[in-house]
Image (cartoon, rainbow, N blue to C red; front, side, top):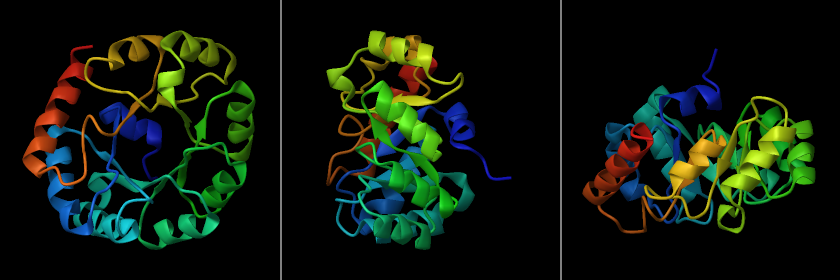
Length: 208
């Protein structure tokens, strides 16, 4: 049986959001992340040739990583990601139809939400986890309140403003994981820089 998102987050609760990644950078950056312990890799669909980057990552890392797409906006994009071997769909918004399409393709779905109404609608559609976005506009106290009413065990991942020095209170509030973007990777960053940032983030998690 394939590992669930919860299984992957148990290994390391960090999701690398690689916005702006190119196919040429995909494997070196992926190797740097996996060597640091981060094994969930998300290539946003507004990156250059994102499907090719996903294909490269899947081909190189196989089942050593959970690889998929972020900023997914249409059913056609879900199909493209599935065809490239991606296994994870992340959206920036609460679109229950995209969740249903992802689940019919056998993909893990982690849609974005901000309100309790959105959260419950997405879970009813089959979401595997929920992305609290933008987390900068919420707080750990908001997350704690949400988790008190959501079904027990619902994985919620804050995204937006997450960095080594900000994740502690969110983790204490019950976050199942964290989407890490610009504090981990910016377009054009060499793999060595990404590796250094990744190690700092992993150390922050393990020391928390």
